[in-house]
Image (tube, rainbow, N blue to C red; front, side):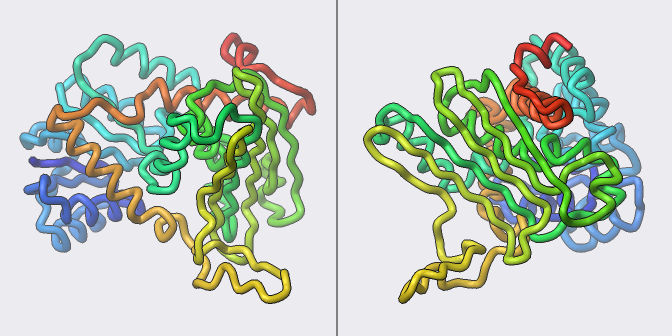
Length: 334
């Protein structure tokens, strides 16, 4: 198949490399506002360069991967759907929930699949955890703990435009909690602090946060996030039930040091970057998209899924600023 790529920054170039190595992908058509980025991708992967998204869609592509800036996501998603071309778009659907809802309305009832990029759904550990929960191996759940700790904050300009740590970082935890447990979040309570980079506080954001999510069956989920984890990139999940408990991410590249006498775990070099931690998951995610394009499977992460994670982020952001519990129903009606 022939796949178009819109946006060739860090993640777009990474996707181009991944797609070029998939057996199902015969050729790429790439476009980026910066001509040098498109030219570099063309030279590296033998791709065709198009000078606009419209030119990509006119180039006979079977599917399109959107890795452009967030502001462009709504227009590019709807343009692909209008052209009848299946589309994969990195999260978020849009900068605001209102815009995201409008995108959902615009594509509703259309027979063109849209896949939103939440790569943890394709990580082998998280897949195994979901399988265990669905099989009833843990019994009834009572506690979930989900952690995402970045080794260092992104640049100030990125923070200022990110929408905040819950919308930018924690949203991955929110999505994977829903996906692994199969439950919905009904209420949240969030807290945060600033003890690191001043520019994060100046942007009205927190650099370290904690959130307690109440799921619709009474299970409690505890989410921990930080922009500062000097030992590395730490993504983990614990799922505790009345029959058994399991964990994702307890492996030798875990960026955590044990001080127990005689304990050598973890023994490997810590993960220091999200692309390192999730290289295989990104490949599996794009492989899944080729199957969506081929019509052999439905979208594994729909716009509706992405918006649900977004509503949780909205509730946590409001809770952080107002120091109170917030229900999901409240933010949906705001």
